[in-house]
Image 1 (cartoon, rainbow, N blue to C red):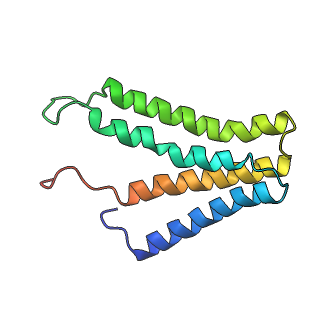
Image 2 (image 1 turned 90 degrees about the vertical axis):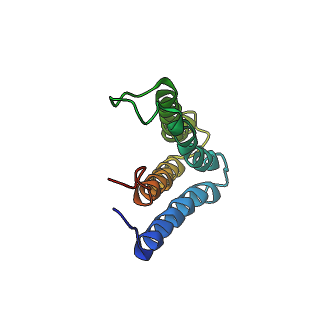
Image 3 (image 1 turned 135 degrees about the vertical axis):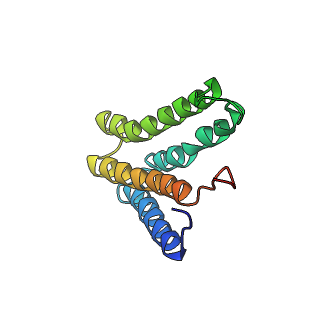
Length: 131
């Protein structure tokens, strides 16, 4: 996708709004605001990957090898994503939140994280001008 249009932005913002709506409804319908932590984890999930992405090797290296900091950023991101999916399940298992709130927060969190990934993929700039 070389250029993303206005329709892409509108679709992504709609899906993001639905995701946050599901997370907020999972809190408000059962008057327990702990599932709101899911939104926080999924919003913070892409940050380590974005921070460590520029710590790779130089652009003149002859092979495509991943460096340690890039792998660390991917690992921390994956830990946060798994935490975002597992936290409502653990809270439901310990009977802190209801199963309906668990399902709504997992679906909403997945929509939020998917929207962030789709936005970063749609508006990714190419590193080289001459390709």
